[in-house]
Length: 310
Image (cartoon, rainbow, N blue to C red; front, side):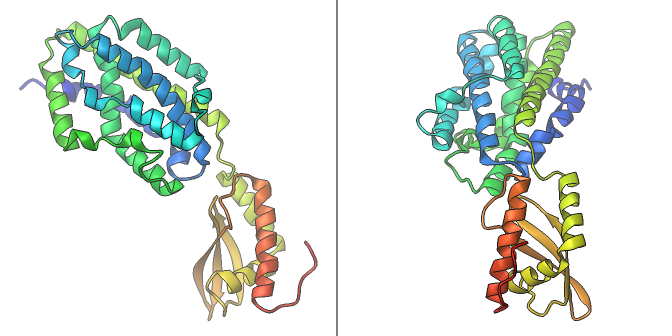
């Protein structure tokens, strides 16, 4: 039995798909290691991309092949505009400055998506099938990491389509029934691979601007300092705010933008304790300020005399 084209396309581009999923920027964003400004910046680049892609979709609506993929219900531009206004205010259009890779991406779309049906379908597939699949995980992760719900995340809401698995099945059926010969199918596959690379370039560009301030190296450096010079401070913080008033020792075991983690000795055994920061931290300098504040507040909470600043 001949392998359906949609299955061949997925298999041929799997490595490219995996590379995009392993983007450092995307990993940091979905795991809450960046600020909401990074999400806003990605949303702005998406707006620029979908502005051209959806213009091409309207232009291709009457094409016998590409027109089958044109579906106004998929359009993301209104949702992206609403997200940007929520995230950045009424001046959100000031953020619509393409990165170098986005500029390259837009140029490629304008070069082929308005005149080559297969090329249009390749980019349409790359974006929308991605949005309906891995994009749903990205949206959920961003919602959880940055406390967003609805507003600011409408781009990821495809509820108007009904069942997403059913919609994707219908989409793949369109790919399978498209009357392309083997040469054209090869060209479409190559264009999808290019689309993945262009998308990864956009993520890489954003990653150069929005950097996780608490990389593993930075956290290890902070841990060495805390555990080498401030174990007594850690103990007092854990007694007051870590839920371990009977603790006899504490060492820092990790941290992120939202809190600091300790390994605490209680009754001869070790337990984990996490103390949240008073706010999400975005720089290493804030860690010292926050730990110092915690320490002095903890002393007061425990009824200990004030300590000298350190």
